[in-house]
Length: 107
Image (cartoon, rainbow, N blue to C red; front, top):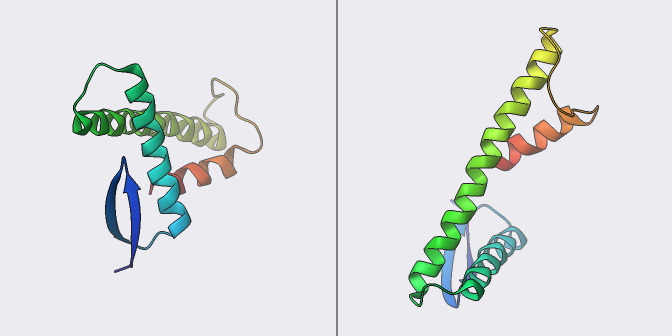
C-alpha cells in the first residue's frame, strides 16, 4: 500500500501511509503549515482546529479553481487541435506540455 511517513501539521504529529516521496509529503505539510501561519496572522479565531480547517478550505478552493481553469484550457486546446475555431486567451507552443503537467498534478 505504501510506506509510512511522519509529517507535522500545525504542531501535530501525523503518520501517513502513502506511495508519495518523503520530500513530496514534506512539501504538502509545509504548504498547509504556511497557510495556517497566514490565517493566524490575520487573527479572527482562537480555536486552532478552526484555523487548520480554514487553511484546508482555502487550499481546497484553490484546487477547485485550478481544476476549472484546467478544464477551460483543455477545451480551448482541444478546439484548436480539431480546427473548430480559435481559442480565447494566451496559449503558446508549450501548452500541450503544460496540460500534461496539470493533468498529472490533479491525479
